[in-house]
Image (cartoon, rainbow, N blue to C red; front, top):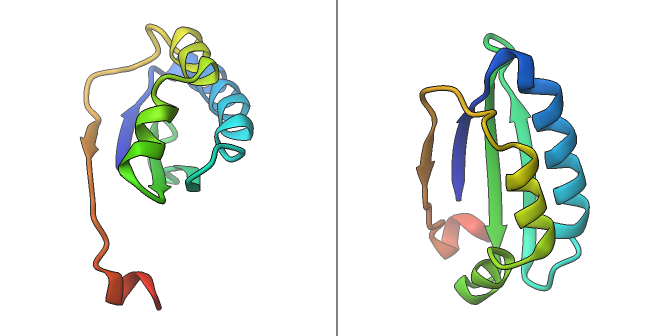
Length: 97
């Protein structure tokens, strides 16, 4: 998964703290292979989340966890206009490299 977040300027620090807390627990989940966030150099309110899961069921379980619910509660109202959500599937030949 690749998710782009546009965050209100006054909520950037809140967003980063909430993500860091969530990431610690998410990375412990069975099937979580990658859970990283990147902040744009050119626009400090723009973030890119990269998630990689072993299988769809692991991601579905993640969406029901208490730490993810706490994350969304902590960032409530932080989103600015913009952003996107995209599910990507990496072909096995590319993934193996």
